[in-house]
Image (tube, rainbow, N blue to C red):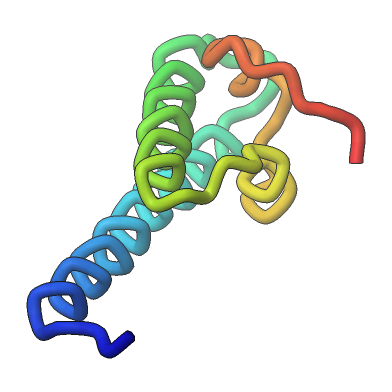
Length: 91
């Protein structure tokens, strides 16, 4: 079955949205990593958790349901995973 123009456009929008969400995750995690462990990290960690959660939702809407890939690829620290309530499954 051939893909229609609208289906191609939707696929492109999904890919672009995933890319934008991934960029926000990378930036928020970089900001968190830049803070010393002794600093008050709660606001920055929550921002990172919100970004990761948004990416997970976006991926799920595209049929990508394995959160472990996000945690691994972005090296999401435990303090962020705990804030979104995700429990990574063993690989």
